[in-house]
Image 1: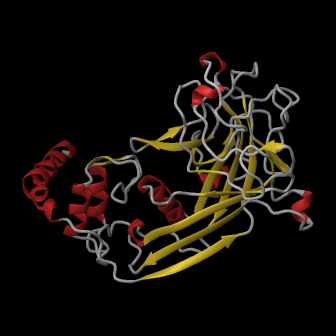
Image 2 (image 1 turned 60 degrees about the horizontal axis):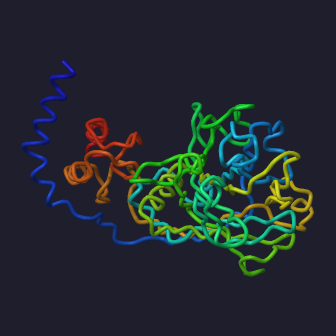
Image 3 (image 1 turned 90 degrees about the vertical axis):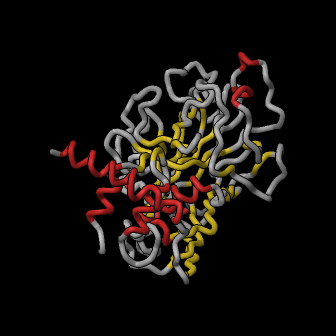
Length: 354
């Protein structure tokens, strides 16, 4: 019976609705409120490392890589920071994605140690792999910020500060991992050197305290200005606001070996203050901070109201048809499975005239 209904629905789409999709227009919101909000500390900040036995309570987190260290059973991006900012108390959650237009996002982190060489540009994957013979064309290594994705049944809300790594996990097993969008697909970049591609972060940490190639003093603030003009990144954060929680992963590919805070050349790896830091608690340094400017368009907050006309109807069906197929980050992917298909159309029909 279900197969017959789906076949009839498909036939109706192809013969009746699909020809109408050429008339699809952009949402018709007519006004918007601008919200400018700064979050002075994350709700969740933790060090993501296979043998971190005190998640959520460390004072600092260090970023480093396993590449060339002799511990290559672990992800290339081995020591990572996970940040989570609850936004729903300051910015309305659960609105239609079309109601959010993010104008800017900045994240800042404060270095808790000195002597890191400042690098303001992405380095090629070949420059990290000594077997390629490709040198790094500038001094230092960048600190990079990415979106966050979850596995192991976790979400940003359920993982929080005490979700499991799991302890001792090897490559591609960590339950929170950094992503970039490749051909519209959120892709784990934890092993970009092994997988032979140069990862493209959402942002690289920048500072005006020193020039590229110079050593950063302790308490240097790195600012990550995210390119929200990128449609995939824009939509990633629209979905974050809709969920009420923004998650980030920060990492670097500074090669490290035991005892853990210096690489094999004796260069110190980047360390950053968490909100639990003694310096933060006594006002001597800042925890990670988030600044966001977002326009909230008028609307009734119905996720299925894709064209923004205040109700669910034929216009929204046309939006779904116009984005039919693989679509990892779009408002018409109502169930968030990465495809716009019959499931999303049925969800829309269930909300018809709401």
